[in-house]
Structure formats: structure tokens, C-alpha cells
Image (cartoon, rainbow over all chains, first blue to last red; front, side, top):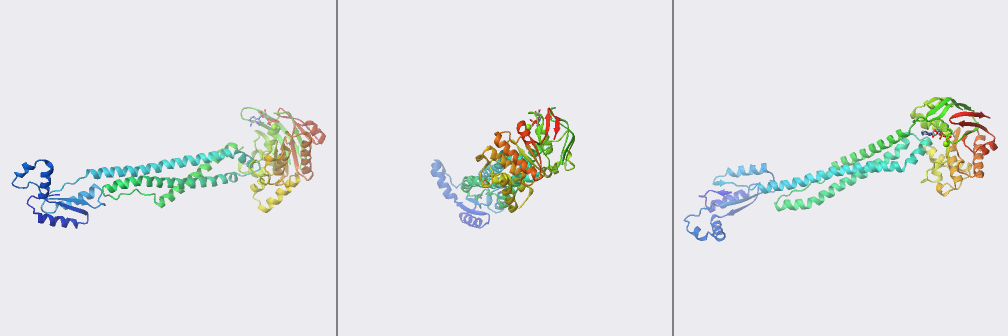
Length: 239
Length: 220
Ligand SMILES: Nc1ncnc2c1ncn2[C@@H]1O[C@H](COP(=O)(O)OP(=O)(O)O)[C@@H](O)[C@H]1O
Ligand SMILES: [Mg+2]
């Protein structure tokens, strides 16, 4: 934030302290124009040229770091508008690029977790239905023989529905664990990246209700899957 | 008890396995069904067990036309018949006890009754004491006895046997046949498909002969 040329160092210090009290501001650093000129003289190589200047052409600058929860464009713009209302201010310049980049990276991570969840869902579906089909194949003889001695359709199907239930249950639990494991793996790097930008971003672990829903869904798939596989086979056999 | 009225069976593909077959079996009767390989013996038995359906005619069991019974009722009709196969059709990863208990478990009997009846059936076929063995550890004749015990354990009014002695030597075959005789003597209707003509002759029961799907001989 560049202050007007006419602002005194005392006024600038006051302003800096005042801004410090703003609830959206985490830190302010006042860069004294005299000190800035000194620095410029030393590092720019224009030392002698600057010495010839009668007046210091630089303004006082207050560097403002917003609090961590301000991590999107909209709330940052709001803060800037608020700052601009102060007298004595010439220019408020904000550095938004890094924020966009940070948000971009964090969104990729969150999207990655969603993709992992979906892929795991498909994997569970495939594994459950294949396991049931395999089990049916292994127990064909048993089905044939129990039919011969007068087993009803429901008697034959019952054990398959039970195992469908358990496969679905196990599949659901394993998928939830894997999703959370991948959240845990990705969360480390992303939150340390975020903290470099003093943001406190964290990936969301799967909420308990989602895990319950997901497992219920997987159980239904298991039961319905075995029902379909077995009843198709039985209809083939039936005379 | 059992009556075939002009029964024909054509398999998909056009094979006429049975052609216009008619015969009757009285309650408590024992009979043999003979004929060359491919004559239609197995098909005839399968129609009684509703493993296949006739394409024409009626198969009457206990005055019920079982060739037109609904799918839902097939399992219950099947429980009235004890069926025995040449290849035993045993569950090899289950014990002798479990194999014989299967029809009773299906019928929903309680554990106590199941145990009592399985032991009784195994006693009849001479396998008491081998309940916990696995079928594969027993001889061919003994495996066939497991199959027979399973067929009679829920006391069906009728027993069907499809070449029950096909893989056995003559002495064992005769023993098995005498076992069927014993069941017949307590009132069970018995129909045995076999092509062991000399054994059938010695036994001296009624013989039904099939030839290329036709009933050519039906004498007592
Ligand atoms: N499932 C089937 N599909 C088509 N043809 C069959 C089938 N089962 C048996 N057949 C044919 O029906 C005829 C009678 O067979 P089957 O009843 O097994 O005779 P058997 O038991 O006397 O040897 C044979 O020609 C056999 O090839
Ligand atoms: Mg046959």
C-alpha cells in the first residue's frame, strides 16, 4: 500500500498500527521511505545519481498480510476496497497471482481425491461381481445337487445373498479406508504447500455419514449382484 | 402311483428320446427299466423327477399331472421322489453326514430330527460309523450307498435309480439291488434303470424295455 507523498513518518506509523487492529489483517510492516531510499541507493547502483536528488521521490509503504482465512479473490477484493477508504492512501496493490496458483493446486488435489473415490467405487463393483460369479462357478455342483433333492429357489439363493452382503460390506469398508489413506497421503504435501503461503488448507477426509452411505451402497450392490448372477443361472437350469 | 399316458419327449435339436410311451406302476411296486444306451431310460426318469418336461402326453404321479406343474411347485413335488444316480452326485467337500442330511435341511427339519433320521438311513445302508468321513475316502460301492441313504432319508414314497450299479462289480451290484428290495418290502415304489440284463433276470421283477424311445416290452 503506497501512501501519499505528503504523509509523515509519524502518520504512517499510526496508520500501520491502526491497520494492524483490523480483524482481517494478520500483519503490517511499515517501510519507511528514508530507509527504502537508503536500500535502493545501496543495491541499485544508482547511488550517486540518487544523492543529487533534493527530495526523496519514494512514498512510505505499508506491507499488509491478510489473515489466512482470506484465501479467495472475493474477500480479498473486499479488504482492498476497505483499505482504499482510508485517507492518505495513493495506491493499493495486491498480489493475487500466487493466490490463484495456490487455489489451483489445492483444487487439483481435492479433484484427485474425488477421482480416486470414483475409481475405487468401480473397482469394488467389479471385484464384488466377479467374486460372486467365481463362487457360483465353484458351487455349481452344489447348486445342481441341492436342486435334485428338492431345494427351492430361495434356499439355493440364500447363502449367495449372504456372501454378496459380506463381499459388499468388506468392499465398501476397504474402499473407504483406501480413500482416506489417499487423502492422508496427498494431504501432507498440499497442506505444507498451503502453509508456505500461510494458508491453512486441509483436504477433507470422508465424513462418517458418507462412509456409511458408501458402504450401504456397496452392500446393496453385493446383494443385488448375487441375486442377478444366481437367478440367471437358476433360470437356465429350470425346466 | 405312477402313470405315463402317451408321453413323448423331443429335445431341442430334434432328438425324439421318448415316443408315445404309456405304462403304469402300482403303489408299492418294484420294476426295472432296460434298454440299450440312448434308448431313453434316463429321459424317462428325468420326466418323473421333473428335471425335464414332456413335449406331449401326461406324467401322472399321485393323480397329479407333474409334466404341467408350475416351476414354483417343482421342488415340493421332487421331495416325494428319492433319486439315485450312477455317478452318485455327492458333495465332495461335505461329510457323509452332511450329504445324507441335505434333503432334511432343505425340508427344514430341526437338528435333533435330522441327526436321528440320518443315522437311521446310514444304518439301513450299512454305513453307520462313517458319518464324519468324506465321500472320496470311501469305496465306489460305499459312495453309492451314501447316495441311496440320501434318497431315502426323508422317506419318499418312490425311489428312482439311474444305473445305480453301472460302475460296480457283480457282487456289489447284487448287494445294492437287495438294498432296493428291502426298501420295496416296506412299501416304497421302486423304479431302476439298468442294462445289466442277467442281474435283472435273476431278481425276477417286472421289466419295462425301451428301444429307441419306444416301450417295446412291459411285462410282469
Ligand atoms: N439334454 C439333451 N439334449 C439333447 N438330446 C439329449 C439330451 N439328453 C439325452 N438326449 C438324447 O436322447 C436320447 C435318449 O437319451 P437317454 O435318455 O440319456 O438314454 P439312456 O439313458 O437310455 O442311455 C439319446 O439319443 C440322447 O442323445
Ligand atoms: Mg442314461
